[in-house]
Length: 614
Image 1 (tube, rainbow, N blue to C red):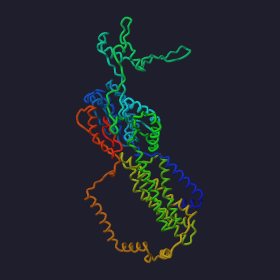
Image 2: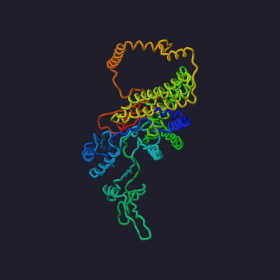
Image 3: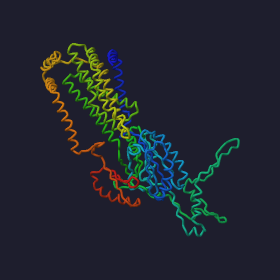
């Protein structure tokens, strides 16, 4: 290490250029590094879902769950399997051991589900297999379209916005809340059917046997090659209305003769309202690794650009903006860094002078920007854990720089040239500073091996501290000495400071004045009574643990903070229809709406994810 220090001090221009490169690159990395609310932790859980309209829970268990369970239970690395059967739906939650490659597991699950499809009822929907991730569980933003417009207008508008938003590279998926599946409803006149001697089977068979893709092959006549197309797929309502049902002599009976066909929706599965108005919600799922602030701002800018094209009675609002917390944390980080630099500079100006304070002040932003550059190069995003680690490391960054600068200042006051003073300071203090930094990192290094999902979540804390404190080590031993050898200058000492310096050199420490002298005399008294100091230390330690145990405060993974919103989930027993559930939610909603002065947005969702978001 001493060889590196000597080489750096004799190559000042190269080191200063490297420092400028780190500061500029670090600032660029800080601006461009992806920022998100929570780290994208790979959750070893895969969800399999199958919908079958009208099936009972008992039949869903027997016809859907059991065939699927028989296939997927043998997948390697499977820890636990939970199955749920309900009316019209069946699902399986597969939890794998931590460490299993979830991408390979997802491929295995899809293969097993494909093998089981032949045993499932043909009338059911296609099985859905997806991985559970932090991004899909926590939307970055929810766009709310509310108003007194017809339901179809809101749904059409929401689908149009979804198609455009999903074209953004930052967005993984857009989920529509309150959407309903389109369908064609056929209203048959029984008197007309009887007059034409038709029955319902004729209508049903005709519809079920049509609207299919017929692969008719390819025609090759030696001069060209083209596919043969059989028009058998419905493209519009007219195709259905003009379809013949029966031919009697020279008269053709079509659908339009015996029935009316209209476009409508299937029965609703969810209801969404905002502040009491019917609403369609767009839940924006950010792609993992993308900047949440940039993504949310881009979505809001897009909605603002298209807001003029929306009907006047459609109102756009937002809920669940996850970028607000990230912005607040970034502001806190910037304020903490500025406060730390300011306080350190003030204290060191009082003790070492303006030039030394400036050198130490450079170490804080230099260490931060270099650490963020390392995180950005490693593909790590800035999230709440990284920001917490950066804020926590503010007080640990300047210790080495202060020690080196103070030693060099003392050498210069003794008449040593500044180049040699900073060289001696860096070489003499290198191993104590390295040992001090290593002991600090050793306290956090075991967190890298924390098992489970919690370990995956918290590993960003030691990684950030290792990057930042290692950067501070190089700042203290290489960059600050080089800057000091160029700009350093001995400070002017008062008579009291000169006397203390002479007493320190002569070894007569008990004659020191001020706080330093008080500390030396207190330390001398403590050294003379080591057993008493040891007993007092043990009493304080045992008392602290005992008092905490008697307080019954308990232990929490995360401390309680003032929430920005309230989630109210309503559960009930019984086979209530979706309309009965919505009536119950509406009763609760009417109780909360009068509190409009205290509530910004009242977001009510009834159905699969019943609850209220305020």
